[in-house]
Length: 437
Ligand SMILES: *Cc1c(COP(=O)(O)O)cnc(C)c1O
Image (cartoon, rainbow, N blue to C red; front, top):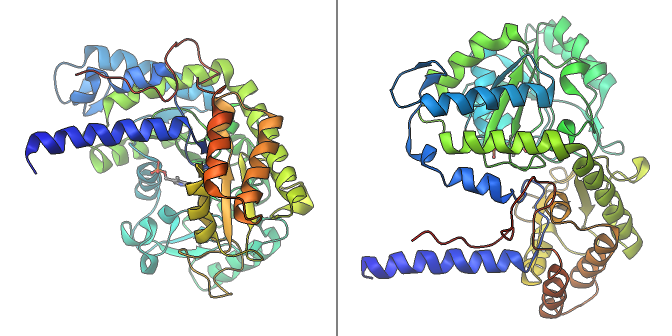
C-alpha cells in the first residue's frame, strides 16, 4: 500500500470510531468522555515539549508557561483530594503505582493486594502473572482474603493472614487497597493502623473511584488512614489519560525522585495541562456529577436484577460506586455476552468474578461482565435511560433480541445525548471529530 493510502486509512478509521461511539452506549467502567476543554489542552503544543524535573528546576529551557500550568495543576490536585502533596507527572495509573512501589519498597519485599477476581489490577499482580508489582519491581505479592457476599476484603481473615506472614518474617512492606472491580469502599479505617503497625506503607489505588472521591463520595482514603493515594485521571475522574500520586509532605521527596528521573522523562505535558482543566471542572461540578453517577449505577443494577440477571453485591444494595457487576454463568459466559452486546452497540467488558478461578474459568470466558455508568452520566443520562439500557442488555444477552435491532434502539436513544455535561463551556459535541489538517 502506498504511504498516502495508509495515511488516508488511519483518518478513515478514526472518523468511523468517532461515529460509532456517538451512536453507542459506552459502559466500560474505566472510561469516560472528557470536556471539549480537556480535548483542546491535549491537542496543544505542550504535547511537543519536554519539561523534565520540577517547576522552576527544569532540565531544559522553554518551560515558562509549562511551569505556570504545572504549579496550578498541583495546587488544584492538592485541593481536590485534600492532600499535602501531589505529583501530577505519572503518565498513567500503572506508573503512579510503580512510583509508590519504587519510593517505599525494595525488590523482594512482600506486598498485600487484592487478587484479580477480587478486584485487583494487573499492576498489583504477581510475577508469574506478569503483574507489574512482581515483574517490574520484584515484589512478592500476597492476596487479601476476600468475602464474596460482602464483595470486600475480609478484615478478620486479613489480620490473621498478615500476623502469620509477620511470624514467618514476611511482614508486608506495602499494603495496597482499592481495585478495578470495585463496588463498595475498602476497609481502610479498619485495616490501615493494623497494617502500619506491621511496618507497611498503605497505598490506596483510586484509579477507578477518583472522580467519586473527588466529589466527596465513596470514601476518603487519605483521611481514613492511607499514607498515599494513586489514581488514573480518566476513569470516574473525567480528565485526559494519565496518572497522579498524592500523599502528605513527608512523602514528597521519595515520590518526586521515583517519578523523575525514575519513571518518566517526558511526562506528556499536554496531558498535564488537561489534568489541570479536569481538576478545575471536578472542583466546580464534581459533587453533582458523583451523586448522579452513583444513583445511576444503583438504578441500573436494580433494573438488571428485575430483568432477571444475578447482580453481585445484592446484600448491600448492589453498588456504592459507578460500577455494576453481573454474574452471567446461568446464561453463558462474560466473553460471549461482551461480543453479543458489542454487535448491539452496547460496549461492556467481560470480568473475572470471585469463584471463577476455582471453577476453572479464565479471563477469556469469565463468569461476569462489568458495567460502568460514568460516561453515560457525563452525557446527561438518568434513571429512565438506565432502565432502558437494562432492558436492552437483557434482551440481547438472554432474551433472543436481534443485536441489530438493539443497535438501532441504542442509536435512537443517543440522539438526545451528544454533549458532555458538568463542564464550564464548550459547544462541540462530545464525540465530534475535530479536523486540523
Ligand atoms: C485502571 C487501573 C490502573 C491503571 O491505570 P492506567 O491509567 O490504565 O495505567 C491501576 N489500578 C487500578 C485499580 C485500575 O483499575
